[in-house]
Length: 317
Image 1 (cartoon, one colour):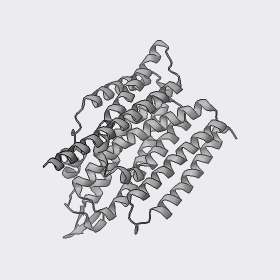
Image 2: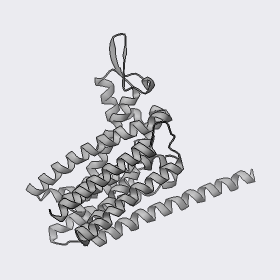
Image 3: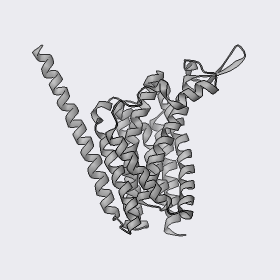
């Protein structure tokens, strides 16, 4: 058995046990997911992902391990941006608190399935048409520049969402949650509830994000093990990350710019290979950590300063 095969087996076993523990013991439907609990769950998933990095270091070598942790951090940071869109979706449709964990779980499972499909197709295409990497590079460069200059409130109106408009045209919808059901029967006709719409929108939102994040991972590594595991670990942590960040959206106002700079760097890195310039993986890791870390710290400092100014103004009044 090769080291890569052993790594796949270990990854599968770890994820299976972790899911049973997280969903079965820590996330019972009868319990509320508090900020403290969400923090513990986030630490749990991040620790697992970093523990797998240590395992890969000894089992598959430092290059694979560094590629994995770079790809994971890239995906994890993009997941934070993804979370903010999830928050908008739940707020727009007024999803009740008791239904949020279940809807998130279904949406995340669908996201993992779609990502596995996209990654598998992407790997086959890149193996046959290597020049697609340069197309991905140009796409990431364009996306990064567009993201950096985009306004923070863009796409905040879910009523104009393309997927939502499509569902309104093709399906009979009702404007309530059906008591937690995804469809109901009224007057002998089946209607789909807002819960169903939310699940579809969560899955399609992640697909849109995957169109950026998966090419970004391919820029870091084309190793199947690295691409699959980094994506799945990042997506599995989305659920706990949602509950951790849902009350702190305004504290990450400049995260989008940090992610944008990373995407521009990754895009340039891919395009540089046209001229046989290969950027070492540790440089990619340093850029990702520096950009994301700096944007988070700066965002929180700006948010705290704004809060202090607001409190000072209130005292004057």
